Length: 384
Ligand SMILES: Cc1ncc(COP(=O)(O)O)c(C=O)c1O
Image (cartoon, rainbow, N blue to C red; front, side, top):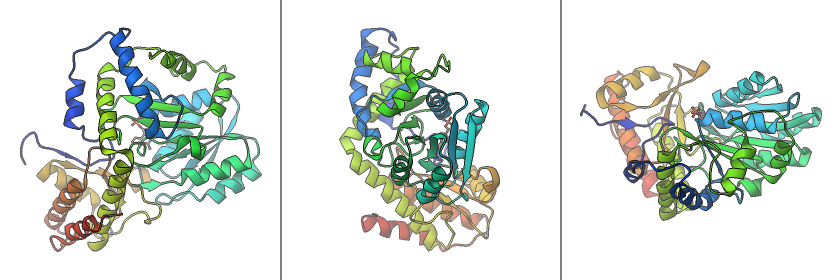
């Protein structure tokens, strides 16, 4: 293993592009100076297409979970009933946050590895008419499922005036989203996944409909008060000291998105997903999800004849390559490969090639090149 070389293939944090790293090295500036206002002024319009919105994207210093809690405390009045769709560990987190805030929470569990079927939610809402907000996870990082949020928004809005709140933490920047057209009321993401930044920022976008609810919510949250962030951003400012270095980086991330083109960015993620899936299929190693439910940003693999943690340990020890394990009851049963953000088809060939070597080292004999070959063929065929 070469010192100082690492291959980070977890579903976040993800590698940071060198130009973003350099941008973040700029000397500090005054957070109330004109330079910071200029920075926010430039960032503001360029963030909107990433979320598919005309609304301002609010930037809060904190991790993704801070964004989830922000959505809950701002959009849900004390005593309200909500429905949380749980397709894995991060749906479960929404439940925990709601419970912490004494919200009456209905939990709708879906088998881990599957996507929710929107008609089930339509039925549930028909039977429970008091629900004020539905929470869902766009990409369920713990299983590699991309939930059908567009279709969910359709059935939810047909049914009621319930708000639809989406955790997009491991999807935004890697999967196409049209927040306004689809009818998402609050969309949250974090900086350290497909947004190609280090951890430390969370982003929140709010629909006009959701603002009406938020503005009548007198639940006090001093720091996570979205109304304060909106008011300040109108003047290119933030209510509290922003993570200035991450904003320098964000400006460069948005320049990279612009240069590549968002459609190309999303197509690259699709291609990486398809290459990864083709590789494991060729190796005869089962995938956790169906093609239809699979996320473009992370793939979960569920081996049936070797220990995924033995593979992960070998990858780490021999190559300093990190892939993620399973969470909760999938711990020890799956491994997950992140392919989002600063990651390309070339990286997929590398990770598959290294995994083939590591598999043979832990005693799972595979013919070298089988997975790489399938991924290469997928790449050659366009991968979509
Ligand atoms: C879908 C999803 N939601 C929320 C989070 C929580 O984000 P953080 O760890 O930044 O608080 C994660 C982190 O992996 C995630 O993948």
